[in-house]
Length: 165
Image (cartoon, rainbow, N blue to C red; front, side, top):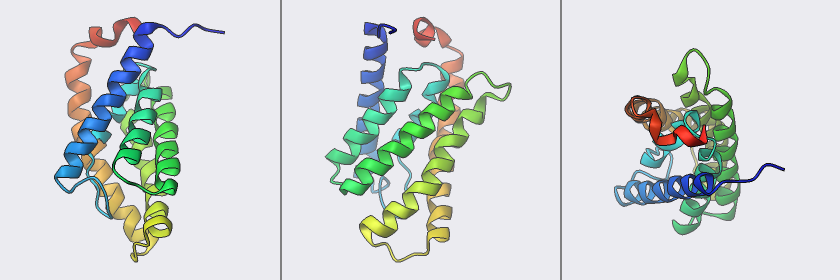
């Protein structure tokens, strides 16, 4: 069994904390929930390209954010699992010749999962395909646009995550 380092746990905890804080910022701006969501915290979904610690960090950050912002149990469970699956898939794409492919799994996972959560947990009356489009647009903004900016800023300073890669 591989030992988990203090650095790994610390990075995961910091990522989780940043996710929670950015979700609260988004929530205070009215952007974090509903049919159209632009969670600023979702830009952190590019972090598996830099460190495997981002996988538990993003999962725990999403789980805590959903718990602390009063989401339903279905949202807490399935929203967090969507983030976990997306983080694992993004991590697997980290060495691809097109590095920004790491932005695709979070967008797709949330486009598929979140509309069903909105429909069956919150009773949003819009058709699932419409919510897939609206959630997808928000994810493209959060992950592909803002996440890409973060990716290139961090890529220049790869030493930040050097020891955990």
